[in-house]
Length: 348
Ligand code: PEP
Ligand code: MN
Image 1 (cartoon, rainbow, N blue to C red):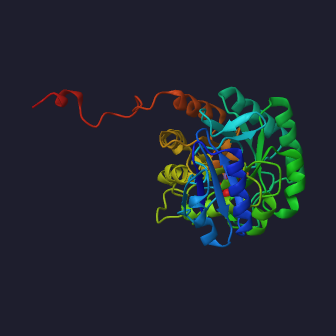
Image 2: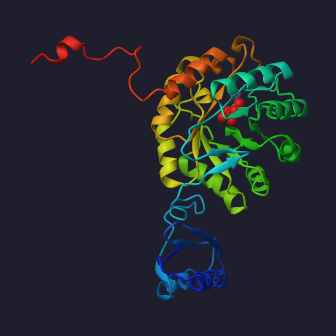
C-alpha cells in the first residue's frame, strides 16, 4: 500500500504515518519528492489498518501498489534514480558508455583496451574475471589475477570498473577490486546471490535473464532493494526467441517499459543482445532512441584472437566509430539510402 501525503503534510504527520505502518506489521519506506512525500507500506501486515490511514492528518490518499514489485516501482518513487559509481552517474542526463573486453585475458590486453575506450569517450571499463561459460572446456577467466589487472586499469585511467560476480564466495574479493558488480543473465534469479548482494555497499548491474519477463527482472531487482541495496542499474542484454541469425534478440521495448514501470536506470548491451559486431552501432543508437541510460559494449584489441565473445567484440577503430555515431543527431545516416527516390517525391 502507498500513503500519499499531502503537499502541506508536516514532519510530525509523516512520522505518525511511519509509526502506524510499523504498528500494522509493514516496513515503511519513505520517498521525499520535490513536491510531496510518499510512504510505502511494504511486506505483509494488517491491510485494513493502512487503508484506515486515509483519514489521518496530512494524508491525501491511500492506494494499493499495482505491481508485485514495490520498491523498484515508480509508484513508490516517481522520480528517476541516479546510481553513482565513483564519480560516474547512471540515470542522469548523460548516456553512460561502459566498454571493455568480455574477459580480462592479460595485463597488456586490458590496459591497452582501457586507454583506447577512454580516448573514445567511454566513462567506465568492463572486463570479466569470473566467466559464466556454457561449456566447462571454454576459458573460465583469470579470477583474482584479472581483478588485480582491473584495479590497476582503474588506477591508471580513472575509469570505474564493473565485473561479474557468479558466486557468493567471490563477493568480498570482488568488492575489494571493482566499483560495480555485475549479476550476469544466467544468475538473474540466483536468489542466494541477490540476497547477499543486497547487503554490499557497491552498485549492482543486474542483467535480464535470457528467458525472464520484465516483471521477473524487476522482481529480481526488488530482492536487492528490499535487502538494503538501492544502487541498482538494470541491463537489457537480449532474450531467447526463435531467431537464429542473432545470438539473442535485444528487446528494445523492454528498455522503455522497464523505465516506465521502475525508477531504476536501464542500460542496453548490444554486444550480447545481437552477437554481431556489424549491428552494434545501429542497435546502440536505437537503444538511446528508446531512452536507455547507457550502453555496455564489448571491445577487444584483436577480436579474432579473443578468448570469449570475439564475434561480437569491436576493435578500437570500430568502437571509435560507434562513439562518433552516438554523438550524431538521430536521423538516417548517409549510408542508408532513402526508401523513396528523391525525383518521385514531388510527382503527383
Ligand atoms: C558478459 O557480460 O560477458 C556476459 C557473460 O553477459 P551475460 O550475462 O549478459 O551473458
Ligand atoms: Mn561476453
